[in-house]
Image (cartoon, rainbow, N blue to C red; front, side, top):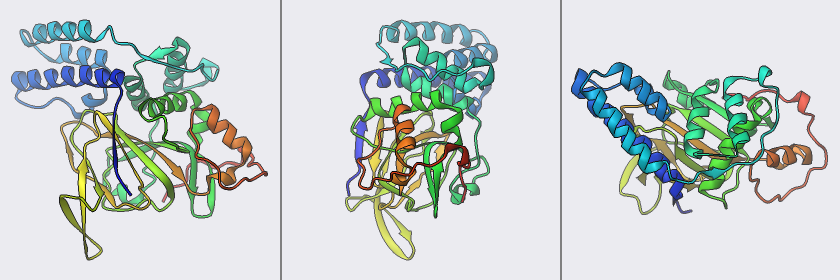
Length: 320
């Protein structure tokens, strides 16, 4: 059971780097101007939104300095090629929310900086209570899920799979861009999701985790025999390593390896997780086809179920 660190491709690296450099400049100038850090929500805003906020908040000469620096960054990174996107799942723009409209617009454009696109969608989506009861200890934690779910004897499709198909396509494109060989049935966006040491018993196969935010620290500690940091779990000493989630994704068997969220600082922490739930085969061919059309890269089936699940009977995401 190994832990893989997967470097992001060049387009995502440059996308991240521009956002990181601009936000670092804003943070530095805000401290110079006001003697304190900027709001933590700033770490998930798009480039233009960060710049607009900073130009309103900062005074000259810091404002002029930031605008000049942002212009230099734009000239440097504007020549980068963006990921090609699939065709959208058409929906009436008047009947869908802001996140789904934006996702459909991005897909209609045919290409986008995929990491930034996922970040913009993440902050527009309606958040839910954490599906992990252990994350409820942090009153600011929330999540959004797409794809299949399994909870005890229950299984089905997460509600947003049906209401936000284009958002799911964008997020799946990001996972596929980072690791085309990864397989998953489910996506989860975790917002300020701090979890104690645990194993994801409802999962199977591998998890792939990447950060969408520009927070400080907030690594993922994962159990490994080659670890350099030990924790005490159920009276036993367990060794592991802290893995940063920025500029590379981490892929590991979360149902077998102990892991927990390290403390983070400065800005909100948002991660995207692609994983496989148990008994996903029992959803049937119709649901499998629907998931595949939305960009989920399903594992190879070991069991074939011929009876399809009726989509109009699917409940929303179940919670612990």
